[in-house]
Image 1 (spheres, helix red, strand yellow):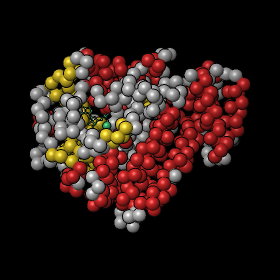
Image 2 (cartoon, rainbow, N blue to C red):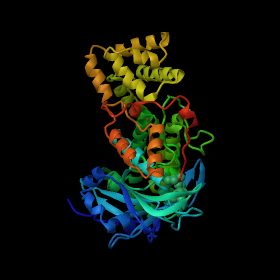
Image 3 (tube, rainbow, N blue to C red):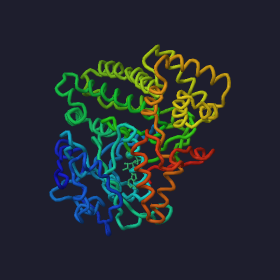
Image 4 (spheres, helix red, strand yellow):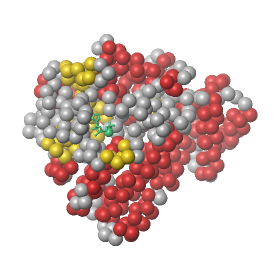
Length: 490
Ligand code: AMP
Ligand code: MG
């Protein structure tokens, strides 16, 4: 294990037009509050090395590591459908890349590290609550086996940031397969520099889809690979009831990882119209809209690649459109695969199984049933413990008929084994909104991170029911979701 992170600067070297050198601002009294030992170990970093005064200053955005060339990355983006040509890291910096255990490079990135050339009117900073929130929710996603950026550390800067009032300033250090976004491609394409676009394509392929290196139709193949990985990603969000909340094109990572944990939250009661974000008045990014929004975002991505796909624009559009048409079937197939696992059934008639799942979701919607716990109750039902399910789904002819169809599909397989397999993919513990807020309040108001740490430990094994305290597995109180509001960029 190497003691300290060894930084590379491949992005800054290969794509200088897409980033700007950044100088750290001061963090007057940095204090490390959370350190992710698992993530550090996965990167061959000794966690103790990150506790040194020098590294705590780095993690708080107060100093650059020895010899490093930190940069802020440029990107554009469609925000709620409107195009902004120049967004970029307004409060973030890429310290460099680190070789992971498998030799692949990952980004080491700070969020909340001070103003940059991309800050516009913002202060470039972040407050403790939202950075801890990203830590908790992204760790939960990782444990749910959903591709995601990971939190490495949360460090307080010792300086207040001003929001509605003074709040404790903090910096999140995170690692990601990369921070190349659809918005990065939008920015590069808008320069009109075809050679720059080609370099970005090559970089993204080498980093994320190395099997496509050297292919003659690299740009089109990249589009196809991103279409596929985003279809898989959104399907996995839908299965756990995750609402990203701000699926702007600058918040879609080419790697296929979930990125930008701003106003995201998990829904309790199953309802396709669920929205948590304070600014999403139209419900553009509602739970049920996520698959089609991603398709829209991928169309914006495809547009950026046209010049690299074919010199003839008509031919480029035809090829890109054809590849984009792969999204709907890829999503449908990823979703159905996941849904079958959730219901403990194997392959069968796609149309019939699709209806089977849709009909269950409809029963859940009508009964205002908790998305997460309904699937655990189904497994209990198979084991012979039937009351929890019938209580949750308002027993009636609809449920009885559905159970007949479902058990017909489960067939003769031993029911306990099927129930165990279901529990292995249906979490019992997710970041419940009320529990997360309580943990953050204790951390921020009482400087007590004990509850955040306990919550992270519970969420680290979301599938195994154990005596961790009942509240971790409880739906929020009725009507909590309706009133629960989350915020961007806080
Ligand atoms: P987000 O909604 O968090 O994806 O951010 C959208 C854009 O706003 C990005 O360009 C961010 O860098 C920028 N931004 C968010 N918060 C701040 C802040 N406090 N200071 C400067 N820029 C910010
Ligand atoms: Mg963002």
